[in-house]
Amino acid sequence: MLLGKDRDYRIRQNPRGMRQTMQLFKSKTLVIPGVAGILFACVGLLPGQTVKEKAAVAAFQYAAEHGDATAQYNLGLLYESGKLVERNPSVAAGWLRKAADQGLSDAAVDLGIMYGKGDGIPQNSSEAVRYYRIAAEHNHSLGEALLGVSYYEGDGVATDYKEAAYWLRKADDQGKHDTELIIAKIYLTGAPNFPRDYEEGAHWLRTASDHGNSEAQADLGAMYYTGEHLRQDWNAAASLLQNPANQGDLNAQHYLGAIYIQGGFGVAANYSEAARWLTRAAKQGDENSQFGIGSLYRAGYGVPKDPVLAYMWLDLAAAGGPSADQARASRDALESGMTPEQIAEAGRLVREWKPISEKQ
Figure 1 (spheres, rainbow, N blue to C red):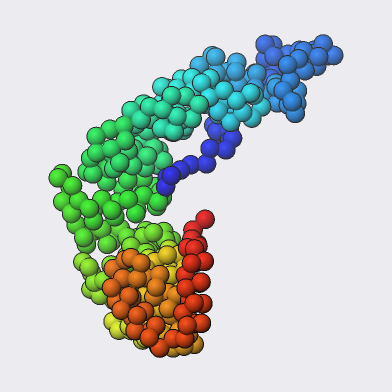
Figure 2 (figure 1 turned 135 degrees about the vertical axis):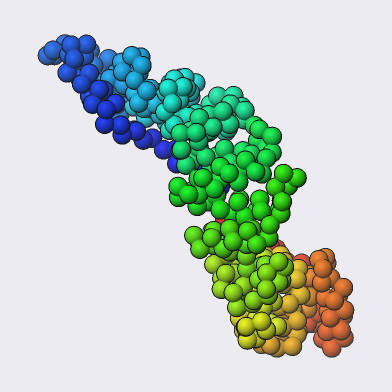
């Protein structure tokens, strides 16, 4: 998930709560003298669990049962992760709920995520939203982000772009920059209660791009390439598209190939660069890029002239996609000048070809 959080085991550091918990070790309740105490502490040890760890769990249990919210949260984390105790999501949810109901926002977020995913407890989007809201109203950035996403997706609550933008922007103000792409989509898409605003949408794409979001870079680069709602600027487009293209985004690769094969709007034509990017997109199955690289092999621009490879890529592009008719005509014209052996080899390459995604 875009706003996923690290669910690894961790103990909330709350000085007051931790002091209270550690004081239990000194209290008469937990004082067990001598050999008898060691034997008692060893009873029921889990595999790999030390006496000290068992004692720590006992201390958290004692404090949690006496109403300490931090201890309740920490005990919930232990049962959620299965560290130091046997994993029990139902018990974990019970302790997290007690802590959340006391206003502990970290516990509310964790419990909301458990409900959202159905992580060991019945999935319940409405309950997830309820606990996200508790956290959000305590200015918890992840709670704000998750509540905003819930309003955006209509998951557990009615879709409401105005509420979504409100909470996502609050989260962004606290450093949750992974909300910026969703904010951009809200403005670019619009809704009955939220007018579309391309300028604001582009602003948020630019902000997300500056924070390294490759999807935002690809989207903003595409807008600069097409000139849709922005002044056409292929230099800006090429700069933005480099990162997502290198990460395997075939659309970004195709746009880069198209920019370099044509040149213009601030970028000089470069057939070698065009061939490099079109080849990567073509290998992933993009029909327009297959047509483009086939055309380069046919003409010998940026790559050695090769009728066999040209035929292969043109034939693949002719099977479908927006360039199918052009690819078919180009392939047929090329075939008239090829030897039977070349045609047979090209046919073999077509039959053996399989798309290879760069995305893992």
